Length: 254
Ligand code: PEP
Image (cartoon, rainbow, N blue to C red; front, side):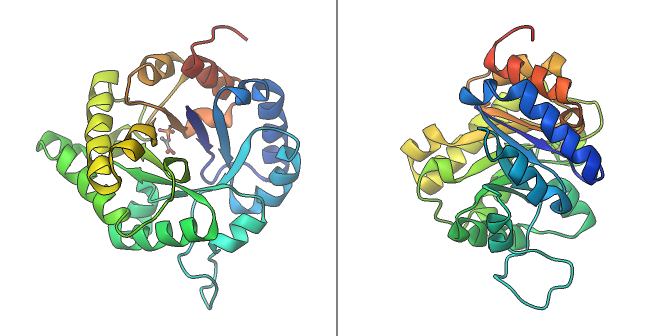
């Protein structure tokens, strides 16, 4: 089980530090049973790394460039993230694909750079509403995985995380049903098995993302192919994030 909070471009440094502190207080003991990852903005990483250093909660970034260094104003490299305390990096988020023209090819370059630097990529895939209505969901997400992970060598299944995030469910309040999500996750596992073998496919963690809230998290994560959640909006509230982790672990109350 792996549950990550994607803060997107929210919180200033002071707000971010207090959110990290509250998340640690609420979820530290739960982090023994699930991998928890916080992905704040770049500006917060080193402060958050210090705060998280004595905890079992990991740090992740939301994006990176694929080059090791160079004249790429405004960008950061895998090594910069690693040396700022990150263990994970979200790649191919639909907002990056939509607003920053990321393609399966550019995602692939980043995935390979992240892995070779020692970061675990959380690779996001998902179909648009138009794709879903045209019956193209499996084709679209299958191609995103095949192209995005082409020639990647994550070593073990722990070195890679997939996130299925239907574009129509991100930030919309519209969530995939557990059946819809589990069906796509099962398909993704088959694609992964074709690429990396059955043992790897059996172990890789595939998160669901898209309007995950305390009320729907338990039913989603109870499904056999759903191994966690990538949480956007609800991760900005420590009590909601805690409730989602508890729901994923099947623990009630707080
Ligand atoms: C996300 O940012 O990956 C996400 C799923 O956002 P939200 O939970 O707000 O839909």
